Image (cartoon, rainbow, N blue to C red):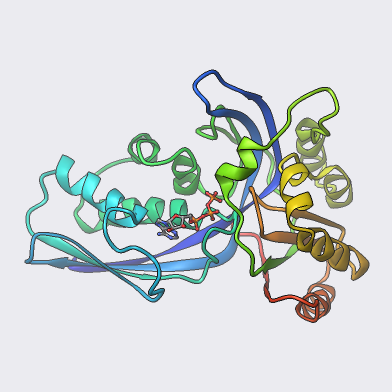
Length: 287
Ligand code: ATP
């Protein structure tokens, strides 16, 4: 095999809680991760020219070691002393810096594809161990589907699947710094923590309504006051048939949960009429 391709799915956080700030500066989290059918595409081709040669359709993205795809390919090439090089074409559709783990899923998929292209014989767990060296979300992005992430995001456990539903993603054209959000997060007795365990219980009962009623993301307490557009999108989704609506990760992407495709499409049209630029996309869950 000289060439292969792979789809890298985006993720949303159906629930996101921050338990505490550790002494080393990292945050202990409790998050429900869910892959959705919004994909970047990676095409990998063996090359006689040594090194990693990355190209992407987004001109502003780095193609050197500042791109997680480059780093993940290099990590495996060095460990397995792969001769020659690899050409990688990265076609991005997942919005960048949106809270949907775009970079992490690209790196995860690159490792999966390298494993296949060069017949490295690594199992998922072995790839996850290597992925963790590059980022806390990468092990989950190798596993995909529905999972509970704890620790700094790397401790994964299987939980019941999210019930079937349609997802509307809307991302306002604003920039949110993940560092700003975590630095400004206040964790005290007034912090409204989502009840992740109740969410898992609702998933076990396959009760979409109860799940939506319990959805929460503690990072909204920082991002929404700084960017009121996020609250406007949530309101728009809820007024137009969403069973629940939440910011994903540290933002600024917002998702809405719908039990009906037409309702999701109609809400998308409404979101696109909001008085600011908004990328919107209807999709469903990736199992
Ligand atoms: P998370 O949800 O994990 O916080 P995100 O979706 O908010 O991630 P990314 O899209 O991964 O954020 O991008 C964050 C930064 O990482 C960007 O500013 C970009 O320069 C850099 N980056 C490195 N590699 C990639 C990649 N393959 N795709 C997108 N961004 C990348």
